[in-house]
Amino acid sequence: MQMLDLLHRWAGGILGLVLALLGLSGALLVHKDAWVWAPGAGDALIRDAAALADAVERMVSGPVHPESIIFASDSFGLHRLRAGDGAGAYVDQTGTIMAQWDGIWARPELWLFDLHHDLLAGDVGETFIGIVALVGLLFVISGFILWWKLRRTFQVKLWPARMSRPAIIRHHRDLGVVLAPLLFLSCLTGAMLTLRPVADLVLRPLGPASEWRAATAAPRVTGGALAEHPDWHAMLSAARERFPDADFRVLSLPRRPGDLITLRLKQRDEWLPNGRTLVWFDPSDGRIIDARDALTLPPGQQAFMKVYPLHAAKVGGLAYRLLMTLSGLGMAVLGTLAVWTFWFKRPRFPAAGIIP
Image (cartoon, rainbow, N blue to C red; front, side):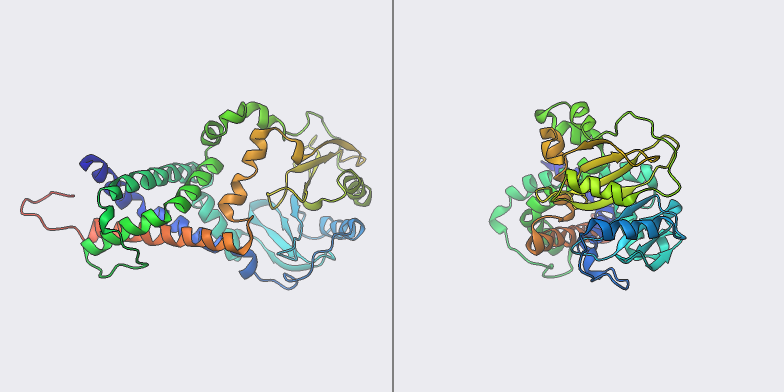
């Protein structure tokens, strides 16, 4: 037990601020659609395929040259264009640019997401975040074990009674056990999203990962060159005919010769905010190459599609968003105070160099 306590404190002292940063940024991102602003952000969603096709024509032929378009939703009334090197724009539902940027630092929601996702360090940062999430899981488990022997002193407080080391440790222990289920969920889903082996292991009872991941892989078909004036009306109408109750969510244009046009849709029973119902088109003539119904995908893929909505509070309405906000803020408080007590509130021992 003493060794477990020592490991818990050392790991918390070293990684506490990273977890605090992830918790605080996550709490802000949960409410992103409420605080991100540009003219037209509050517009009602237009679901008409013909009107959307007109807007797509304007966006694709405009000055931004998008690689993909994230369409407006019920909670955010602007389309978002994504171009290379973090450039992009917000566009209203008629296709008019409302805000434009050349890099992520021009918009707080963009760099905040990258900070939360990979610490602004790309693939290396993403892997590190996944490892930190796994350490967070160990914090929750070891913290509960350490709390159990002192459970009779349990007392819930949002903030330590005093900023002394014993008071902070007691507050850390008791608040941590209250938030343990939410922290466990946040860390587990975060690790599954950033480390593929973790997701594969957790979902292994539902089938081999290679099997369910292949269910959403692009068809092995080489597309033609992108037409000078693609028939967006025909493509969106064909997708709407195939999935009449689905909302259009993301349109991805070919990045390399031979790539297909990909359209993601969201059906009513899907949890993912951008859906996982897919339609692929040949860029040269707009004919449908393949389509996948997200509601008929293998159980492993169905389960994995629920991981991000649970992590980012994209399901469950305001009540669940508030719970995940509490998880993020709690992680920020616990991580910050863990570092504070470890590095600046150490007890003084007669023998120099002894660290608890």
